[in-house]
Image (cartoon, rainbow, N blue to C red; front, side, top):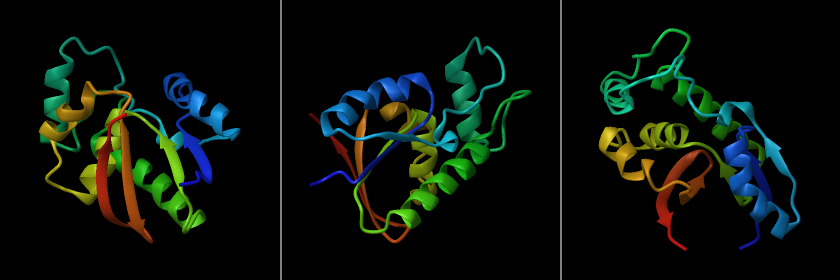
Length: 144
């Protein structure tokens, strides 16, 4: 399957993750800011508790941080833009665990804290999503 285009969050760790593949395919990486990781706002001592609070209440956020609703809205906006722009093409999108989880939750509302926890420590993680227009048809974790 040929890869038509590669997109990434502009953050260093996603760029570092996808760069070897882009180089091997001799493709440019296009960055989209809305694929970035969530902004927490400040240092969090108990990250597990913070995550639980956010997944229990999608509007919960710290000062100067983002709620999961906000992460989901911007991530889905970026995804829908890309799906519309690249109809019938194969895309690679390099993003972050929370952004990815918020996207999955959009299509599968039962994907909550347990789902996030199931992928959180697998990064980098490869998932395949198949769409018809902007409707998710299937999602599958790819193991190498």
